[in-house]
Image (cartoon, rainbow, N blue to C red):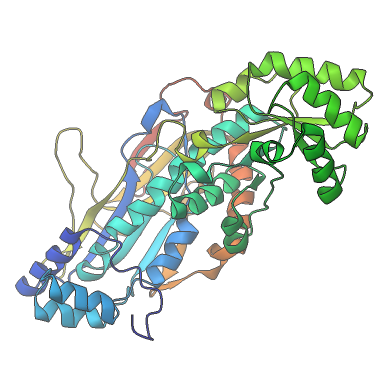
Length: 447
């Protein structure tokens, strides 16, 4: 890796992006101005809404999408592209613009989540990276939002790192936090993105000691009586008795990781109250998803820890988004709307402006104004009863720093909490259904 590019993301892509570039440089179309759009044709898994996540990560990755010596050497050695294309890539830097939905925003079928404008040569190379990030992070965030809705005011912690790839685990922790989780067990997510971290002890801690009591005493001595003791390594009733005997009635919490949780939680609550530990909280962490969390709504549970389900999108591991060319310049320099017409995989050509119509603060539709002739797109003033959904995320290849790093994560989390209040009541149900609001396409300047 050259000194100029200490952390390239340029090969986080599919080979055909580069072979298309190679051919476009040969036939003279590489410098045609183009508009690419990232959107979802449908909401997978019968979800009623989606949550945009990964945008802040993506902007930073695009900034680092540069071809250093190592990347260029690989392309030459493997004969992926010809010498002229390698020479072009030496100076590659995305200098176009990106507009799109803010991170944490809700989306629906056809929402123009990301619009990438630049030359074909610049913009086509970003397809795989953009989809890798947004498909994964948005799937996690959508699942996390559903869990957050099911949990209500009870806090959620993400603890699924061991069920995901090491880099995906960090991204998942970040996405879950944006969509309503309060903490993660992943320390890299804490360091990189500012996500609050949590964690105490696993069953191996209890098994390490000669007795459960020895383990509890050592943990309390180290972490204080405010800690949470894991009480189900052996017998839960005995574990709770031991926990209170060791820590006293001021024990912060107990964690349950097995059993029929509604029944066990009720029994443990009764036992704790009987011992005088009325303030000791109960956390449950056993294979939870949004449905299990909802089933515990009437149980005396104070907090949830979720692992496998949240980091894998709770059965929907990808958001199913696509990245399509929707407009380009022709050989004479004029703009042409283009669209794929394949059965069940069609797209809608033209630049788009997106709005969410509202009635007394509740979302009623996703309104997409389409400009086939490339006249001025609709502005917010054209739709006074709607909220404009798109922001400038990158201009002349430079990301808006407000969306990056820990500050961007906090802004996305705040934005998500705000826009989720716009959802109609039917969107809060967990059952499979049509999208909570319809998507309406109109010609630019229409209503």
